[in-house]
Length: 476
Ligand SMILES: Cc1cc2nc3c(=O)[nH]c(=O)nc-3n(C[C@H](O)[C@H](O)[C@H](O)COP(=O)(O)O)c2cc1C
Ligand SMILES: [Mn+2]
Image 1 (cartoon, rainbow, N blue to C red):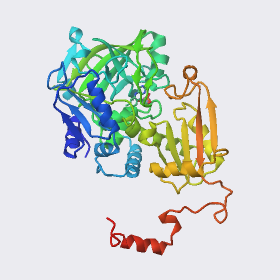
Image 2 (cartoon, rainbow, N blue to C red):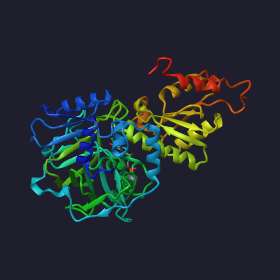
Image 3 (spheres, rainbow, N blue to C red):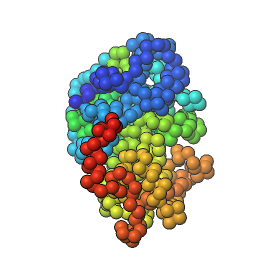
């Protein structure tokens, strides 16, 4: 079952014991943030805050839509107990079949239309998410629609936006994202404002699609249709020609101005640390707001085990797999474990060796070098199993010849916590590849040690007998 909107999804979470409704009054100023952060870190259910200080009782905040693989499974219409490997396989299968959107005349996001002097971003309970954030972030789990003015293709991306004042927002599209490139190459040189629509509270797979990284001009709306296996319904904006998901909760229409910037940040980042400082970043003037009655503001609380660590990590892992495959690497599975916040990727290969490890490192750092640790494992290691990966790293990676280090400048990921201020400024960094495969020249007879695991070190017949008798021995 695919959900029409976030409300149906929230109902499903509730039915499956994956939602806590908080009816007690909570403060948008840090309290919502602190509660949701602890919920992510303890893998507690998602939250619907139903009573927010200073706001009407029917204005709600929803946090943690896809903070766990159980909830991603629910969003995909799968059993919440589906193992991550199977979620990943299903996700990969769906990605292949793009589905074009359809346009409709109207939708719930048009229930309330606010224009002109009435525009006030403070109508919504945007939370002060972390202590020390530069301001109240209204857009942390959302999608931003924009268009290439010459070629007409539409981009969706997830780029955070902070309230600057009642009619302006400051945002952070990183320099190499599609919105930032189109802004830099097409709108700014022409001195033209860039129309955007910030869509909050769409159905979760629709929102997730915006954070995926298909190639430039490859429209994320079709990728959303692919994940949903159903077209996204779009409706035209009030103050520009962009199309937005009709069932979204809140749509903020605006223009990124060609001649102004505004302070943005700092913000608690997906790395699990407070990042950067205050920087001058794109300024967006709001031209209209439309919203459902009794709107639900969705949020992600960036930090360990947020949506980046789980749902986004899965799409990033599959992007890594596609890239390695296209370069002829004999890749089997790829995964980024939630606690590594997408800075470390585990790559499974049919057969390894230092040469393959080096190649993998080169391929994954050729353009944007977002990942700083790559762990390469053989078929005997399940990439989805954190214990097996840690065991392989501890035992199979030679501390001297098993580590490949690739250094670069101009393309490092500036939010990598271990980089110095100087390195961040120059986008200077490094990626280490840990080769946890047995050397190619090692022979099974003499060099490769047999794993002393149940499945490896006992005769097949005995294993079968033990499994048959397991409960008879007294185990559950
Ligand atoms: C929860 C979440 C928050 C994100 N925040 C930002 C952000 O503030 N700025 C940014 O550049 N990318 C952010 N990203 C990553 C982008 O959404 C991702 O790179 C996406 O591919 C951008 O779209 P594009 O490839 O069309 O530019 C975020 C991802 C997630 C899952
Ligand atoms: Mn894009």
